[in-house]
Amino acid sequence: MKVLVTGHEGYIGCVLVPLFQSAGHEVVGLDNGLFRGCDFDPPVLDCETLTLDIRDVEPKHLQGFDAVVHLAGISNDPLGDLNPRGTYDINHEASVQVARAAKAAGVPRFIHSSSCSLYGAAGDAPIDETGAFNPVTPYGESKVFVERDVTPMADDSFSPTFLRNSTAYGVSPRLRGDLVVNNLTGYALTTGEVLLKSDGTPWRPLVHIRDISRAFLAVMEADRSLVHGKAYNVGATKENYQMIDVARIVADVVPDSHIKIEEGAGPDKRCYRVDCDLITRELGFECEWTVRQGVEELYEAYKAHGLTLDEFTSSRYVRIRHVKSLIDGGQIDTNLRFKERGVA
Image 1 (cartoon, one colour):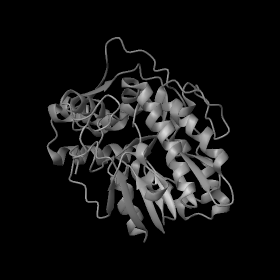
Image 2: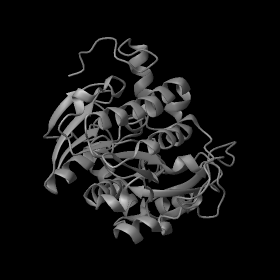
Image 3: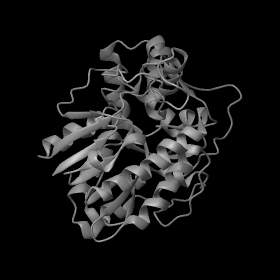
């Protein structure tokens, strides 16, 4: 299949693109280059690239593709809180625009990177794809709006599918240090402290980015009738954790580290457990990674890299710091648009 992957230069995209290519698919990437230079290891992306903001995507850009895999967007809650209006513009309105452009261009499959964040404050009972939405951040709410607006587009010629990813972790050439498993492991190695910024009670489903990438591949290669208009929680039901339990795993893996709860930390209102059995029942998809394996992978990669605290907490790995540095440097405006297009 010929596949367009938006946000292909990001944290997940750098892992997903080679996976798709190894499965025999032709990949073209579309990215605005916002996080170029935020490298843990230089990404090896041997594919044609359209340097384009998703807010500017038109049907002409999507002609001739068999599928669009839509990863691009504001990637986390802190960035969403920095500019809530921009989050809705990009994650909601631009994502719907990409779907409309794909349909107008005759692209038959549209696979959207949604999030379990749309469940928000759901408590500690596992919630499946039929559960109520209760987002507590602009990021989570934007994901609800995309599903609401794109689902009615489904017809005989256009088939959308929504992958509600659990919270991601794992090593990537475009590493993010602001994701909980990556963050706790990085602090443990560089400071000896497994630093919890909540009281450790919130529940969160966790999934490795390679398993996220495999789920996208499984959906794209599945019979259309199985996935048409569907939403799937992506992860493993057994991989729901309270944050204190993740911290214990990190402390066990990283030598000479101990758990520390940040002063004044309280419960995080984002608390949800998810049931991920549907994607296994319908597509035979199962995750290959556990959090412990992910922490072991991260620890070894960080150690081999010679990671320091200053580097780990810098704008290279913390997305909100990178964006703020680009705004302060006059390279982008507060709507996250480049002031000059020279982002090659």
